[in-house]
Image (tube, rainbow, N blue to C red):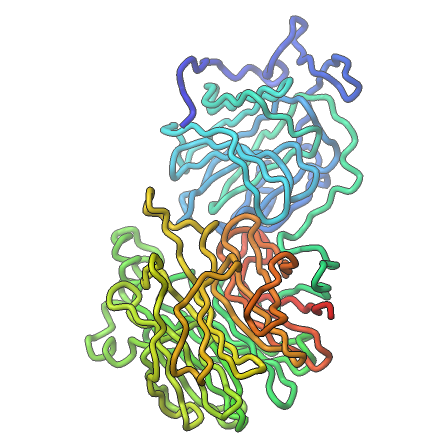
Length: 589
């Protein structure tokens, strides 16, 4: 926590006198050539055509710039000039909507839409944070923080930043609340942003010496990555399905014998946890170039989540998912707040004990007509987000997990009747020091020699803080050489992220894909050239970056030409909810 001792009280001076003033009433700053120059005032809302917007719902209303979305971090940039030393001020009012931090912010030193220094006014936690980001999708570096401030929504506040000779001072309503001694972002664009809240801004102005904007400044999507990588070429990344205002998560893809691509996911949701999730499916008949509208596959009274899909050797489609009541505890924690919480509680009250017992659990369903109709659900003992796999001997094998908190078991089930029924044939053990409750969301693949490789999401918990540490949460892996009946103890492999999805390419290589929920956020792939014995982590492939950690569950399908389409969920643009996205890529031979 930043010290508040010695905080200086000051009053915001009239328009032509605010800032760090010289004797003449003007601000002295160091110009681009190192000479002291007088800084004039620029009213940044004077020209509406000078602004570029990245995400969100920005609009000019009654002289104010208003951003209405309560999702993500939409940003607005003043494009006409760049600035170095400066005094920057804005008035802001945060709307009392949204479940997040409800923050307003200023930024400066921007050399692209993803690189800047940010001053964050967080009304929910009543704090100010100064942080920097210097690349796409992550590497946030906190420079300073002040807590316990009189920051509230629904009222107008005045935020101000003074940056001179590397010394930063942040003001809230005329009072210095934070000092950061060494901030040197260099000249760049200035702008505004919101975080998980709607905000109105007015009277945004700067006192500085303007310089030309960066020549190559552009709005860059967080998911953009280098196309030419050591082990792969990225061909394209795009949105496959977006449901405006709704949340999509946890997809799987398969390619049928007829060449059609089927992507299945939980969609039409309020949020990551909610009562309304339903399993949906979209189709592509042109290798992912275009996709159908979503079809509903499952819509039980509970939250339908984590959908997997395969095509068996007979041509049957088998999909898997699980149902959840987790939304109920979330709603109870917000009882009395109305809005979506009240709707969730009302729905929970309608769920009788019989309905809960009937629908809560882990499930699979079959379709023998390419997904046009589906047979009744069948229970399984375990569950995994990407479902079972088809083996070369005609069996289906489902590596899953049951009872996540107590009595946890890493289950191995088989179906010898094309997914009509399941029978548990094994359990997988964990290594000493790896608690079984840290294992989640497995997936498996059959290597060319018949070995079955299963990988697990693993949550590493710091023994000192008892908190999960994503920087050490490497995948675990177990192998079976007798068709899944016996297994090695699960051991760590050098793949950082989760959860895994595995496929075998026609050349015999294995591909594991996984999301990484720490900076730099994104979707990653790694190749094994020896049937899963080793993984080429030195040439790990970054398929896509991401704005934040609500991402992942990637799954892949190899196309006829040897390229790979990997689907996943994450945010496309700041201010939106998550959607279904995909990256088409080609491994280098």
